[in-house]
Length: 351
Image 1: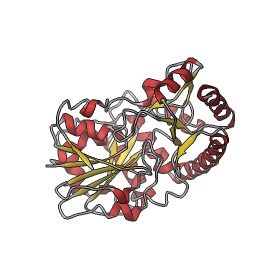
Image 2 (image 1 turned 180 degrees about the horizontal axis):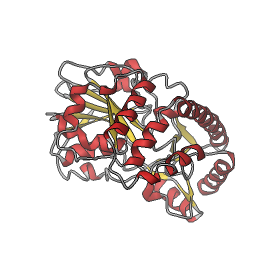
Image 3 (image 1 turned 120 degrees about the vertical axis):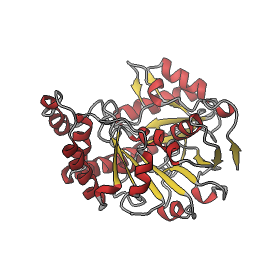
Image 4 (image 1 turned 120 degrees about the horizontal axis):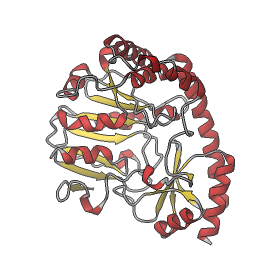
């Protein structure tokens, strides 16, 4: 099923495509609305960035950018020419209109920034709405779509699609864009396409979630050099600052990848514990979940969200995601103590 792209490009179907969890996370609240791990980067990464402060009097160097691309390429078994450094994964979405699509298919429920960027550029968009349990096999993508965008694992459903189902979307003349912003939060990254060099698959990765770098904006794209060249048309000179380049390089080194793998295992453990708490409290979780967040189905979710906020807890509203009704909330996976705080508050509110 789908909906053609017409009307207000900011609010198709009265859905606010630019609402993100940071708006819900009011300072002073216990934050379950934003999917960033911790309040800042790990100490080893903070020290690495601090050591680079002395370089800020110089423009970012081509050699540093090349070294970062080489490190990302080595991390994924790719060629450096298949790597494009980004100011956060969101910059990659802003570049998508440069591919000149005649019809873009956006698979929902999913992160809405790609659709907003395409609509802003006047690209015709069709929403492909997946029914519960939001499996990709149910996607009725129009044959005419020459650009397909999806998330894996998907925000906000926490669904991890099999790589084979993603690859089944490929067609002659079509580019498939896979948002793997939370790919490094999945132990072993079993369904990632980041390591596959395919001419028609573009993978966008973010380093801001697991490494807690949301304020620095760090990410990269992996794809065919020709596709990456099209994405960069008209891009400003020095598009990334020195600290961003250094962070991307640091987070792609073997020790950092091993650190992220341990963090992914911790996320899986915390998620299992939260699922048990929510299940015992009778709260419905859309599952199975594979990402560092959970999609909850609760009656009158907006009222529940506001009551939680009054009690000092921020959760993500989900009525801004195409394909979700007003009875959904998204909560970040957190450690035992805050998780118990959330579940206790939910139990009280739902009672």
